[in-house]
Image (cartoon, rainbow, N blue to C red):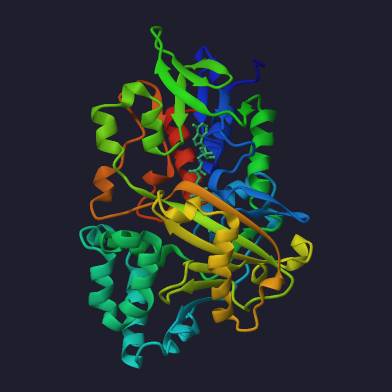
Length: 438
Ligand SMILES: Cc1cc2nc3c(=O)[nH]c(=O)nc-3n(C[C@H](O)[C@H](O)[C@H](O)COP(=O)(O)OP(=O)(O)OC[C@H]3O[C@@H](n4cnc5c(N)ncnc54)[C@H](O)[C@@H]3O)c2cc1C
């Protein structure tokens, strides 16, 4: 392996690191380790970097397989984008976000739109506005950790607001677990989110490609299309990572895979640790992307609160970024979070389109399936951890019972909803702790 100028060579030797997973977390961890002069090899099952935030080529740009944007509070992602020279591509438009309730579209992205939210009586709009103002101002989420979002919203925002806006949203994200979701998670959604949404023009994939380039420039190695099948401790105290292409020994390993998968491939974590920490449930994500020959709505983000629709959100990406970035295509995501064994994940593309397309006519009566020029369907397991009351007590620490083997994954993001920013921040903090010179 290539040797490179190393800060920690002054401590006598290089530490070799294996990083499992090439999403935001694994790539950032590998970059930070390489920047400290440590040896690093990253293993990623997919052929390309980016994990859940990865994109594919769509005209001259990359398009995320699952809709993505940043909030103003995503300072660690913003800093990394700037650090890697992509800051001039980061734009902060303020696109329209709205909810579909009773067949009508209600914008709900500003204090004025809350006052105009005629799906509920005026007095309830005032309660909604006051509760949002409280959640924005309240700095301490700990006092909200013992109650559910469902109960808190019903109590403070009122039954009508709960029924019209939040119950459908919680249900669509967490299915029949919606009544168990902890209020601190909801607090974080309101507290940290901004109406301006950040996007790396041309696609977030550029960030992940840049990370790979930088890791390699610093002497690190990246192995894509390489699935890790086991991690074992050798007699000499090293950690052996086995893949379909052979095995590699490291002083230290960081797994960014979901905890349940990490336990499955690490026999030494099975038993007490595995039983304790594999319990966090996650939903999978299912996303249909349609390329249309014309605009469908004038909204970027539409929460579909009406019952009976087969998707929970309609995200018209080209009402946020210009269609020219995608060769003139109008791009619409139809997204879902579902239990990982849900039948939708097994349906063919034709079956999915036959089920979904008729509902677009309800949103825009002029819609005709002939508008659809291309489509893509993406599915991912472990996409949305189910953040129930007591979640903080169930989170695994980064340290495991196996010396020098660390677990860092998006289910450890709390109370915020998982996002690129929090995976990047977790990687920054973990490497800072592991390599004090970082
Ligand atoms: C529908 C949807 C919408 C989202 N919207 C946003 C948004 O608007 N803004 C935002 O910031 N975030 C958003 N997110 C969340 C964001 O994508 C994630 O928080 C972030 O990408 C997580 O990065 P990660 O590296 O922690 O995990 P992952 O991206 O899951 O990375 C883990 C990696 O491990 C790899 N892997 C798994 N098993 C193995 C194995 N055996 N061997 C080797 N590699 C393996 C996987 O292929 C994957 O690349 C969204 C997610 C979804 C699903």
